[in-house]
Amino acid sequence: MGKIRQIELLAPAKNVENAKQVILHGADAVYIGAPKFGARAAASNTIEDIAELVEFAHQYYVRVYVALNTIIYEDELAEVEQLIWQLWHIGVDALIVQDMGITKLNLPPIPLHASTQCDNRTPEKVKFLQEAGFRQVVLARELSLQQIKEISSQTNVALEAFIHGALCVSYSGQCYMSYALGGRSANRGVCAQFCRLPYDLVDAKGKVLMRDKYLLSLRDLHRSKQDIEAMIDAGVSSFKIEGRLKEMAYCKNVTAWYRQTIDEIIASRSDLKRSSSGKEQINFQPRPDRVFNRGFTDYFLKGRPKDLYNFDTPKSMGEEMGFVRAQKLQHFIYLGKEDLNNGDGLSYFDENGKFAGFRVNKVEGNKVYPANASLRLKTGIKLYRTANQAFDAAMEKTTAQRRIDVEMACWETQDGFALQLSDTEGHRAAIQFACEKTPAQKPQKEHLRALLSKATHPLFSVQDCHIDWKGEYFLPSSQWTEQRNRLYELFVKTRKIQYPKEEYRLPQTQHAYPQEKLSYLGNVLNSQAKAFYQQHQVTQVEPALEADENIQGKIELMRCKHCLRYALKACPKQADHQVLDEPLHLVYKQYRLPLAFDCRRCEMIILKA
Image (cartoon, helix red, strand yellow):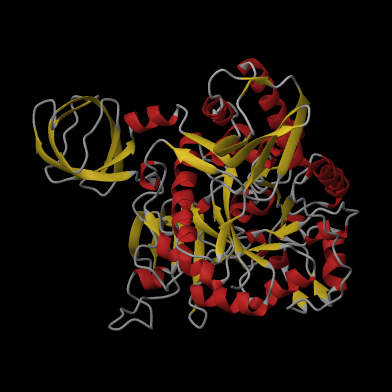
């Protein structure tokens, strides 16, 4: 048998409370924002909170990764270095970074992961990062299975890939629309989400081809069991859920769904195992469509998908429910696959194609009374549930437990007894205690086995209890309980001491970067980042856009696999394609953005005139 691969489910958390819940619902690793310098500025956390999370997570051998993945200004470098040392001292397992200047700082031996913001699309780029000392690389979401296989075959660094959540329409780290148009840099963690705004698509003659549509708004990523297994076989070992700004119910539900899905894959194979300890008991049925989603796509994993975008709304679609069968005076007749609840939120597209919603006041069988009694819905209109009152209420309660399987053993010693705990990972702790071995008047072993196996510890579940006595002895239950608790305390300490903490110092290398020249697309904002690229044989390094508040000239705001020509059946590669009057422009208020098309790479480019 070959080497058994560890598979990691990596879940997001905006705070320590969410982080603890995704761990209880099955995460093998958690990523969370640092106090500053994370790509989600609204999801920062204090050092004290992260330390609390580390203490909790490491009980289950769950790793904690901290996102420090913005680009850094020169006067921030010293603060970043100090912050990294603080994170190291509290036990953080790795940092997710974008700015290569960080590699030139005086760092503790903490592993670095290359953020998806590094734009990791090619074998050459990933191999470069591997040789530069990065321990894990987050792949671009746009990659196909074949591209992942090519990267995996040419590298041996751990590969991480997204499997769920919001999609940036641009290649990550390569979007400058928010900064160029609104002064808020995505690479600094404050993206204004211009991609979720309504645009007109206008041709060269001024004809409006599409009006007031969300032309850059993609559906959310969702990968199936078959997709995930194919990604495992392609070389991915870490499967990442997006959502550091999402609420608790989203985190619980989505993490639990992928936990169950990945467990099914692992159970069917002998070459895989999960990378953390414990088993989860989930007391609800996970359903990703019951929480925030814009509709789902598997993106470019198997080629260009048909369900890539949703031009009608950037909002959550929720779960598709059914139809309006008939409109009555103050209610409508509902026909659907599931019952509705009082207080549910429903949405629909009106006759003008606008996304609208309402709250359900009362449900009587198939009669639904909207809170707005004057609401009139067209017969046959499709309904979506964006708020599920019963599900949301259930998610506010305790929805999961996670325990580590252990075995207990008890045997006689010369002057008393010994107790031992062991788990399936090879950890073991034992205690001995002296006491008078009083012969029992009736059998005690089964009583003791039940007492020692009792689920009294939140971390452990006793699967078997071996009692090796020559006779039957009596000892008060209180004494056994005291010794059992002492053993648990020792076992927790034993596992903590033996936690497999990785220490890694970056090598000093001078291997060539895949490009000799770097434009602003290299996102170089400080002297240390510039020195890094020069050390790796880059001869020309332009500063990042964020180095200059006055952006002049025609620049590339974003490059993406999403293509409006393709969406309009105007792609030259499509049979019977229409021919448009180009250049095309996206128009929003005062902004008029030219579009260009790189058909060789099958990419659309949005420019700033």
